[in-house]
Image 1 (cartoon, rainbow, N blue to C red):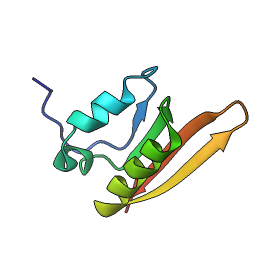
Image 2: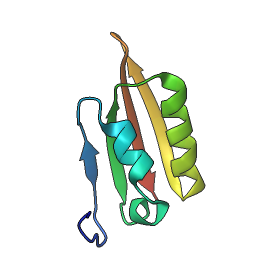
Image 3: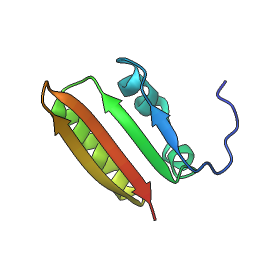
Length: 79
């Protein structure tokens, strides 16, 4: 069982490869309880783009950053 969430200001996610599973199991209603997300992504870029689109569809502004060395981040701010 996942803990009951209230409104949270920020949720950084650095889980070394488990982020796909976390987002696949996280309901949109739970994500809406967050104001900001910062995600380090260890999976293919198209999946990160789909996550960005999902977050946009529920009210987040998103920014995907790809740094040298193929380091991938998604920043999302609801508002």
